[in-house]
Amino acid sequence: MEATQTYSYRRPSLLRPGGLGLETSGGTTARSLAATNPSGTDAHPQFFTGFLQRPAVAAAGLLAVAEVARTRYFQPAETSFRDPVVTSDGERLRFESFSVCGGVHLRLDVLAAGHDGDVVDRGTTNVDVNEPLRRALSGVLDGAALHLSVGPDEVTVTTKTEKLVERKVPLPRRWVRGFGEIYVLSGEFDTRAELSAAEAARFLRALPSQRRASGAFWFAPAGRSLRLVSRPVPGAVCLAGPQRLAALLPLLRFASGLRVYGPVVNASSQAVASAWEVTLPGMRLTATVSPDATRGFSGEGAVLDALSGDTVAEDADLISALLAFEPHIDTPTLAAESGLDQTRVRAALVRLGAAGRIGRDLAEAASFHRELPFDGAVVEALNPRHGAARALVAAGAVQFERNRPGDVAALVSSGTDTHRVRLDGDRRSCTCIWYAKHLGTRGPCKHVLAVQQSMRVEG
Image 1 (spheres, rainbow, N blue to C red):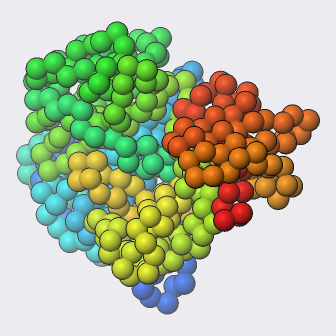
Image 2 (cartoon, helix red, strand yellow):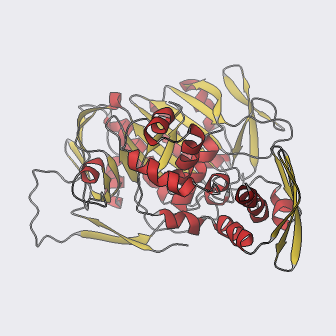
Image 3 (cartoon, one colour):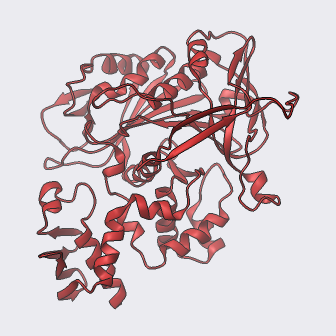
């Protein structure tokens, strides 16, 4: 499900002697939201002007983000450019992209210690990282601080007759869905290991690099490093398709360490997502990889439970009005300001995350605000199981055999078939083919969702 989007820039992004100018195309800013512009959009927002303290590190990180945006790790093929997303929150700049196959998300955080300048505005936009700029970035060396501008330079005069740089590309709606899935999945992540720079380099360079190494590998902490184990064990981290961490390798010469994140696992766990964060001077580069190298994040189904609440859409609209690109989203503060309890606030944040509007910073154990050019209708369109469940409820397809707290059994009529759904505490099961194939690892099926929605309708 992809349309065509036109990125329109005043001029190409350029690396000049002593200066890197990243041109912007559209976006939402805090200033425009507060002004008379009701949509909060700006055709060419300016977010930052100042100096990068470590030019070579920033250039390598930005180049890695851009390279991931045009890489298909599964079934490699020629692809078009997709421009990274950048968010300015007043303290840092976050550059993000997904791989074309949707299974790798890479984010470069340029922290306050990594730059010295003025944050002109806060918000989110796309930035032009064209082929000539990619080649130029590969030659940047550390030395004198490099001037960076994100957005058109205010002292540059642009005439009305100047031709805009336009590039039509597929609209990456699966990026939006991927942002939401990562937000939910990473909420279960804890730190699994911390490696020194030397151990990180040794570990990452020893990983299989062949594209055929697409299976799931498990690594357990062993002293100051990680060791390969034959099966999941407590404390282990999963890495599916280890060649998908290739984007981290050029940054290892600058790294001070590697931090690894993943969910709690046990001996019966199936493959899960994981995040690999390279610590850099004044920056962080984080790669989050899906549980299977053959599929992207957009099919994980992690957001479906949060989308099913009776009031979640209205709650999300209310919470959205309170967000203002603050460096950290504080749930208790939002609860106090909105009058909602924290459970409803968290569900609203997941819905906003499903529209690409909330991200998670694992290093700081905090969420952050971003904006993308999609509305709430896109969330419904990108999660068809949610809509299918609502249709089943509307058709009266759910019949309860037993409905008491912690123990629910129901029959769900779907087409010519009838499926039995069981909700036993935190465990859910269904007799449909989807559940038999995935065993709940890719979110609930439409029949389970329909039963959960019917329970709320019945009170």
